[in-house]
Length: 322
Ligand SMILES: C[S@@+](CC[C@H](N)C(=O)[O-])C[C@H]1O[C@@H](n2cnc3c(N)ncnc32)[C@H](O)[C@@H]1O
Image (tube, rainbow, N blue to C red; front, side):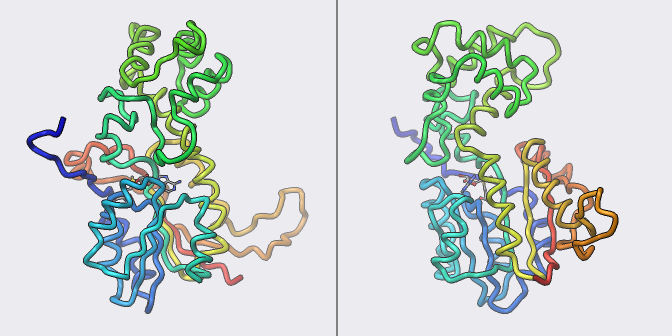
């Protein structure tokens, strides 16, 4: 049933000013080529285009066709300067080749899902809304969370909850969810949450809803989020121009850890194995980190937008001459 007060899909872009600042010198290059690999509703992209020179162009990727459609509308004022594409991080090399973009000046990744996706009950991302347990950012392809849950063995599910959710009760939850065999497993967000609460709800002192970490683990698995992030980071040395800048916003420790490791290895002066008696790599850092550790949103921002609470921003400048 259509609601009488139609709500516009919304997303509050996180650490917007900090991101524009971190990328500013790259945006200011003549004819800058900018890539936002997580277009979402286009909030960051609009700010980047507004801060860049008038001849800058922005390629925006999103794997969610619905987000892409809204972003296209939100960026219409930028005309041909904004190029939205339905693609994943792992398609980026191909899309850049299609555009004839060898290297780019700025790359932004604002990981995870946007508020609009969480707000749409039928997408199945949120245990606060009842809907089909889908969780695919791109509903046109791949396996839903319900189908994944239906086919895993108890051992595989426990491993997934432990590795991708860091869920301390992984085994207990997996046992409860697999009790009735494949047929009886939850296919909606509400039945999944209820089963988790029954399994662990009475146990002491949990910091968040008992379903939080299970939902996180399933979402990461369904969308291969860590594999996608690795494929994006592995591409940066080939595609970021010298003097180019990259910014990555992560929302949980698994993805932030991966970003940190890549950024640290590129900014290390010597990457020779410790057993080598002398340095053979030339001892030159390939990138300079622009954030010391990870930058966090201000208290004012998290008060206004609680979804920003877990954000960690890392940024770098590529200095490699190769
Ligand atoms: C946090 S939102 C981005 C919000 C955006 N920065 C804004 O200001 O509106 C993340 C977006 O990235 C998309 N996304 C996540 N992983 C992706 C991937 N591997 N490839 C392409 N898009 C992805 C999601 O569909 C979602 O729309």
